[in-house]
Length: 130
Image (cartoon, rainbow, N blue to C red):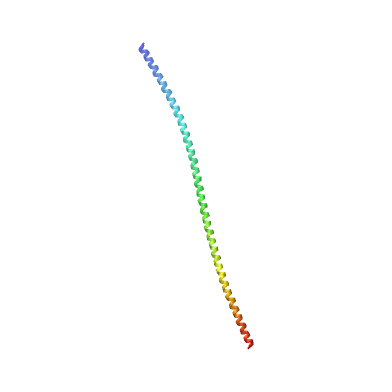
């Protein structure tokens, strides 16, 4: 009887231990599922944030490219403007030089014409007197 009771107690103890192990396995499984769900949520949030950063980086890169293009265009326009101003200044300088030369030639022609007139008048006077 005592041995039978000991066996019964041992079986009950073993059964109780099995139930404790099963409860612990369920608790661990539930905790694992909860942690996995939380981890997946964190990974999803991180991936979403990384996509957002990637979009911002791409937008910044495109804006930088547009700014570079605009800068190059403005630089080309400025250089073209400088070339045009230089050409106009050169043209004005050449025009002023041509005007000076023309005035000098006109003065020479006027002097020569006056000299010819005086000489022709003197000859006409001399002819008239003779």
